[in-house]
Amino acid sequence: MAVRDILRMGHPVLFQQAAPVIEFNTPELAVLLEDMHDTMIAANGAGLAAPQIGMSLQVVIFGVKENPRYPDAEQVPYTILINPKITAIEDEMVEGWEGCLSVPGLRGVVPRYSHIRYTGFDPKGEVIDRTVQGFHARVVQHECDHLIGVLYPMRMTDLRALGYTSVLFPDRDESEDD
Ligand code: NI
Image (cartoon, rainbow, N blue to C red; front, side):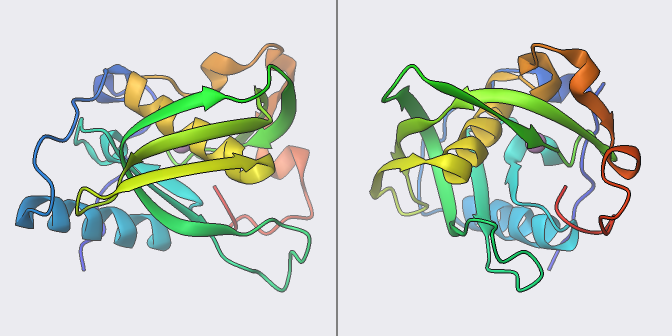
C-alpha cells in the first residue's frame, strides 16, 4: 500500500497534456494503479487521475460506493480507464457541484454534458465502451479533464459559484467526498 501525495492547483504537472499508455498489463502500470487506488481511498475521493500524483499518463480511476448516509447519491462502479475518449450524446449540459482533491476545501458549480459515451481500455488492454448519464457522466468528464490539463474551476461559467465547502455546506462532514 502506498498513499502518494496529491498535487494541488498551481503545480505545473496538473496543467499538462498527459501521454497515452503504450504498454498494458505491465508491473509498472500495476504499481501505479495500486498507488492511485490507495491514494483515492485514503483521501475519500470519488476519482483520481494519474497526473494528480505526478504521473503525466492517461490513466484515471473512479467509483462511488453506496453510502447509507447519502441514500440518494448515485453509485458509480469502480473503474480503471486508460487512454479515454469522451463523446457527448446530446448537447444538453447540466450544472452540478464538484470538488477536486487537487483543489482541497472548495466546491464549485460546473456545467457538464448530461449524457456521454466514453471509451478506453482497462489495465489488460481490453476495451471499455459505456454510455452513461448523470453523476457517472460528470465524474468521468471531471477525471478526463485532468488528462488535458484542465481543473474544474477552468470549466466554471460563474466564479461566484466557487466557495469553501465549510461555508457553502456548513452541515456537511468535511471528511466526505472531495
Ligand atoms: Ni479532480
